Amino acid sequence: MNPVYLMGALIPLAFLSGWWVARRRGTRRSGAERHALSSDYFRGLNYLLNEEQDKAIEVFLRLAEYNRDTVETHLALGNLFRRRGEVDRAIRVHQHLVSRPNLSDDMKTVALLELGEDYMRAGLLDRAETLFADLAAMNAHAPSALRHLIAIYQHERDWHQAIEQARRLEKMSGESQGHDIAHYYCELAEQARQHGARGDASHFLSQAFEHDRNCTRAYMIAGALQVQAGDYKAAIDSYQHAIGTGIAFVPEILPPLLECHVRSGTMDQAERFLRDIIERYHGVSPVLALTRIYRERDGEQAAVAFLTEQLRLRPSVRGLMALIDATMDKVSGDARANFLILRDLTRKLLEGQAMYRCSQCGFGAKAHHWQCPSCKHWATVLPILGVANE
Figure 1 (spheres, rainbow, N blue to C red):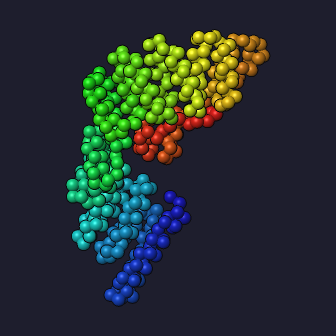
Figure 2: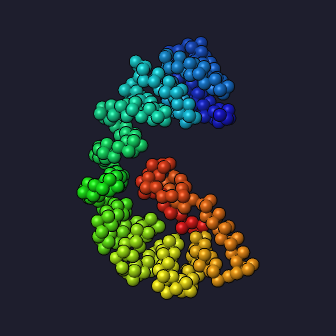
Figure 3: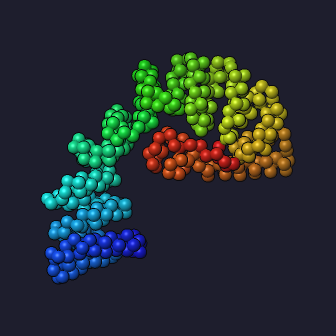
């Protein structure tokens, strides 16, 4: 750890604590006692700067025994250890605070919340779950405890418990949790669909729509269920509703939607729909889909002409690769060799690109995730619109 960083983080904290102690207890402490307290603080800081964390902890914990004003300092110290990945030391600091007999109820609750976060960071989810459940039952900082519980149940994929705690949080805080609850039901619906339990899946989807009428993911799962039942017309309606509620997810929705049009023999309807989408969506996926339709119906020349026109309007590396592939058979000799080099370069360029990015935290990915792996928000990982992406 950079000593400069530690100095910047801890010395102001030490001075503030020292000033507060002097102000609060100046009339009751002797000069010798204040001097001893100040010396202890700086001895602890010196241990930290010399990477002797265990000795530093001993000093700060001794201070906590006779100085109640060091609670904030110890909370900050435990937080620092957790952020540095030294979770065992963070647990030790926060457990000591919790065990103090003279700690106020409010400060003890804060220390318990911090201890629960330590347990989560250490992977001790059973301990964290018990601690947060107890806090929520006592209504002590319940919203924070419930949010932590929800995070644990999401990690464990216990969607029923996540739904229950999210409903409690909504009732207690007044903040709508409908968006997240809808995704929990979508997780349950997808599990049921994959196991062939279409009735259960439909039930979970109806619950998802109750909490979020415009849940794009629920419409997509409904479409998949209808495909399994052979009802392609209903599936087409569901996928089109999905695009209507979440046009950003066009790259995920178009493949199953077009497959339904193929199976139902309604490619004219598909063409009209894609032409409408192109006016509203600026990525390349609908362009490539229309190019394939024109190639099969009107021939290679018509498809190349359409794709070339669209690439002038919306330059795209993926579109360029499709154009190169479409024209490879028409060139030979040096021109063909140059085309092969260009195709390899464009392919390598795409291989190194993230195709999706979280709108909340900026996490980049090559594949779509309904829940961001980084910040855990739902439906925030979207296709990146750009020359080298979508």
